[in-house]
Length: 82
Image 1: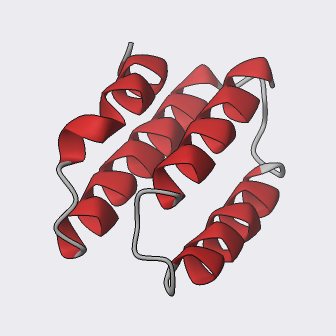
Image 2: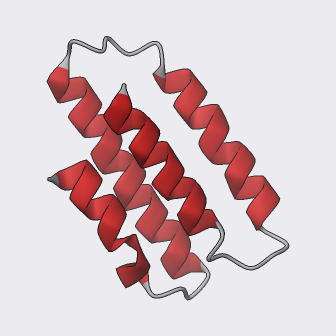
Image 3: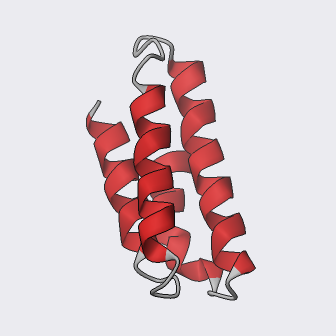
């Protein structure tokens, strides 16, 4: 659970790197996704790791979409991918 909160906090930090008019949408999108993930079995490490990798990859995709250097996602990569 602690790792999931760290990932969520880091995703929200990355949202602040996006253009101002897009931030509310992506903040809400991130929240909805993390709320949906609470149904995943917290004892299933493989499922959690897959969700964290997806969060990282999706975050990089969004950053690239808005021409934000994805190196700002390095901390998220450390948390999600070890």
